[in-house]
Image 1 (cartoon, helix red, strand yellow):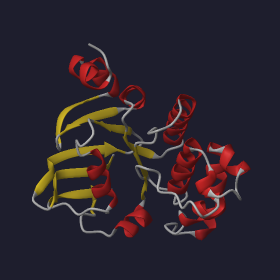
Image 2: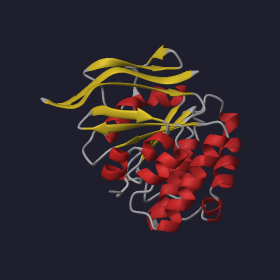
Image 3: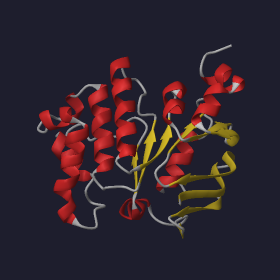
Image 4: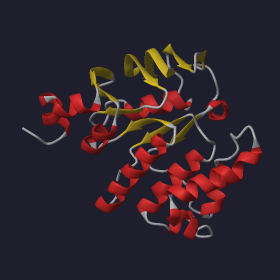
Length: 237
């Protein structure tokens, strides 16, 4: 079943057209990844889906409903949650306080305990550091906190924007393992990621975004084997 669909979406920054009439869909239960160079429009696409940016044309459907004009906080209630590029945690708040900020979108507040249980099961380190200030944690721990906060609202689709950026290799491996586990638990994932190798290895489907337009699409395995993708994004050739 198609859970998320973008139809002919364009986004402008003033007179500059950042996204050019892109269309793609995400099926329920998938991991879908967007790869591309810096400035290709990946983060703009994610911010448009989450409602932080408004498209200049086109439409966004979620579970068959047109959400193009829907406010960002309402989209969270409907089941779209994002861990943004740069993590965006509250550095002066504790781990628990940061996670609690993610619960406002829960329709049924009785699910808060269930959300905490899931997050602490995925990220035992957060459970160990409940009272620690977010700003005193390592980059990898802050990324765990950002993903955990996004999961607190029990989203149907989780938007992850550059989750491995700036992390040490051991944290990168751990984050991608957890992303796979989150998906296996039933959460659909849309992933923007600079580490194309890791992202494509886990993606059911993938899209290449270049200067605001989709230029290639296929399964993760197909794009991993694509000579042009290998040369441009995987450091091969």
